[in-house]
Image (cartoon, rainbow, N blue to C red; front, top):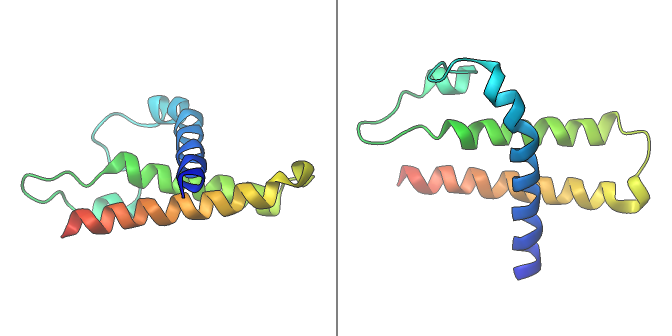
Length: 101
């Protein structure tokens, strides 16, 4: 269990680190970046978690790159990476759902 959590955390941290430059220069702060952020206004006293939503989109993009455009299987690590990305996306969606309660 701890190993799966550690893998998931590593993937999320890596995706965040890779996405940081893109987030810094992409758009001014406070401007929604996609229809999901526009469609769900912040509830009074709560934020819509734009960083988590952006991280999910970034993880999905990385997964798509690995699944469709990667030239190799990276020594057998591609399948494990895709599985870890799926787990990370699942946990991030669960976190967003939990926050709605």
